[in-house]
Length: 101
Image (cartoon, rainbow, N blue to C red; front, top):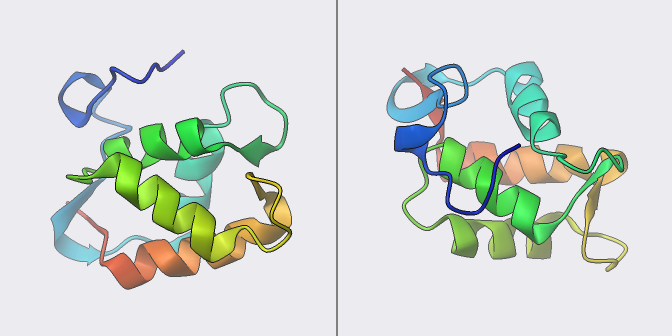
C-alpha cells in the first residue's frame, strides 16, 4: 500500500504517468489512476488518498491539489470523492494540465 511518504520518485514507473510533456491523459486512464488510490477500497477517495494520487501525477503541491480537488468535486460535502463526483474531479485535473510522457 502507498503511504503519505510516497512520492513520484519512489512509486512504480507505471504509476507516475503524468508529467508536463506530451499529449493529454485520456479520461479513462485518469479515472483508473484515481481509483487505484482508493486504498481502503470503500469506493470513494479521501483527502489523504487524493494527496497520494496527485503526488503520483507529479504535482509539486499534492496536498494543496487534493484540498482544491476536494473543494471542486465534493458536491455533497461529505469530505470524500465518490464515483458520481469523480467526473467533476477529472475535469479539474484536466483543467490543471496534467499530461502523459
